[in-house]
Image (tube, rainbow, N blue to C red; front, side):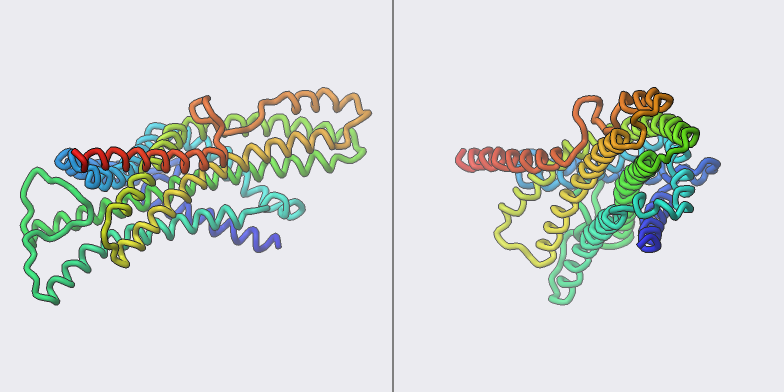
Length: 392
């Protein structure tokens, strides 16, 4: 059981590290300038795609269906820009957070005595990260393949194309020929932007899940140590003192996560409702849906729901484990030992661990339900606006 847990954690950790390294976002302490430039390249590619799609939205602002189509794409690239900017600005915070969590968790894995408790539910965390990665990859694969299939189908049936389709709905400030070098250059550029979106989205979201699990693992280790205090007074006092110091470090880690991921979480929770609404509206307005379109819409809806759930569920798990830690302190073998009571009082009065969004609301599964409710409400509003537009 412990070996399976370690292998699951290793796969989870290594996948996240590879994705972040390719994007230049893994917090290496001695990274060179060339490596750091990778993150800027990712950001500029996403910025270019955002501006192109924004031009399309402005050009078709009077058409609700086209605007919603462009907004769903534009918000995804804007999310990628925000994530890269947050990681670049908070680079030192990222390094500090990583140093406090990753090396210590590696030490915990060497202690076989409490591995079963520390690695509990690691397979779920790994599954969420893996499914997110596969879903995003499937979405971008269909995004790239769709225009190619259209072109091949037209060639087979000898249909002349005035303008070859690109990957995204966009408006460039210059004309693009039906085919040729200029078209290939733009298609390549959009393909690079698509892969930048893939690496940024999957890596940053998976890292949040990884750090949440590492904090939860430390809380479980502390709970295990406290509940197994024996009659040796000196060892019990030492364990409680160590837990107090370790908990203070975890409070700092949670504060660092809030500083780094606060804007990202707020943006995701706000825009995913809009994107889900836009997807539902696009589907409702399509008279016929091809197999590829159906698969793309389904995958995109799953992606946005999964992304929202990942952040919300990690927040709930962290809050729950913090409460379990306090319960473990209450049920520990410290009653009647006066020299331990002062340490216990300090632990009980310490601030509970919970990820908050700009000190306003605690991140939990409730947020996921709220996003779905908002998406439905926005969809109903869009339908009423579109009906008024048709009547006029």
